[in-house]
Length: 190
Length: 130
Image 1: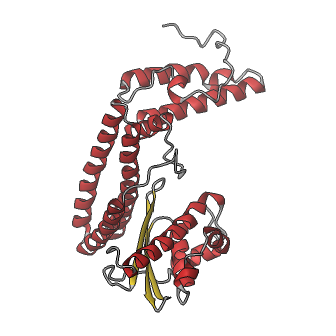
Image 2: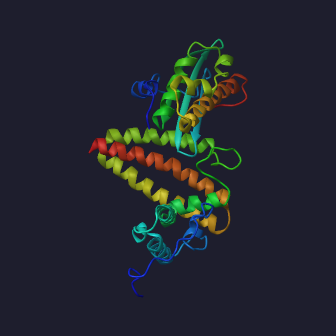
Image 3: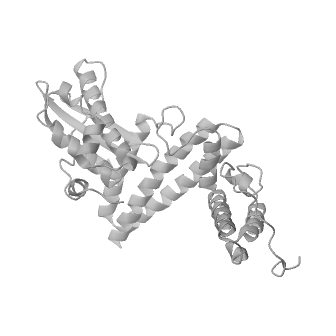
């Protein structure tokens, strides 16, 4: 590959805000995204639209390059994380976990799950009193559990069960909040 | 996120934190959650002759969620059950000057008090155990 630094950069295409993150990087939407394909697509595209290449261009072109670069970065950040990628695929599948809309928003967990979340806070209080070691055990356990939930969501997405994946990812959000609280407790105990 | 003085006050000095025994027949328990952010809220009322004598809450979430539930427990004490059921999230949001992105916290508190009342009334009717 020859360096393109000497030659003028290829002109930028119009910015299309309706493109999804996969389209932005020229990838097919997939739960099990090939890590190398993602990396090379990101590098190739971010090089092409990098604002440094347009420092001598007019202001409109510079703005356009910024817009492209920001969107490429955002797409990469979302797609490289298995959790965020799964949430994003659920969103493309019609369920927005950031919304509380009854039809298209995050599905409500069962009462039993919510009661469990309250009870586990009581467990956290007990562990806080017991000390750092107990908190670390709790954190390790929870990390494994969260990983298993993301795996379950990925499996559901692979078999096209978007609603089931959404349910698992909602559980993951509750557990993420619990994990934050354990981290805070650990910091205070340390 | 800039919180209003009232939110900060409730967050730093939450009123009525705690629990009642949810098996007591004069206690109604509401447990609700916000799926988008993972907040969980438990709100309980203790009722005597149709009047809420005491209320307690435990909320695991952001400052606005804690403040909303704290405020509701303050408001409902001394209220008749049917009046407490009329509390609207817009009143909570207004009192706490919640910004639009935090309105869902007041919705959560309204859902929690309604769930607690429903639980109490179900017990009263002898239909179910909370």
